[in-house]
Image (tube, rainbow, N blue to C red; front, side, top):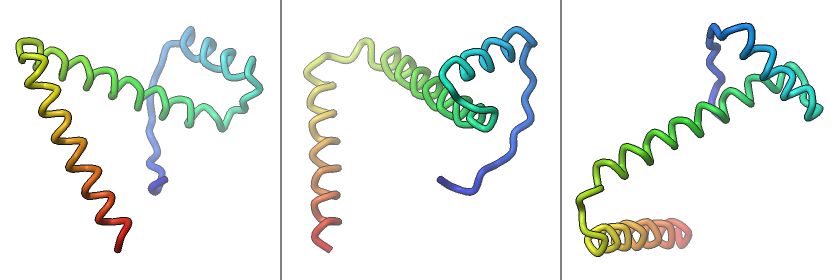
Length: 86
C-alpha cells in the first residue's frame, strides 16, 4: 500500500453507530474502520465506473464490444508475457 493519507470526514451519528456495530459484530477493532472505509470507497468507485461504462456503451453492438474487449485482453496478456520473460 502507498503512504497513507489522512482524511477527515463527517457522517451522521446513525451511520457511525451502524458501521461501528457492524465491525464489532465481526470482531473487528477501531483501527479496522479505515480499512473498511477504503474498501467501501473502492467498491463504490468501481460500481460508478461500471455504470458509466455500461451507459456509454449501451448503443454499441455486442460484437463490437466483444472484439474490443478481446483485443484489450490480448494486449495485456502479451505485455505480461513479455514482462515475465525479462
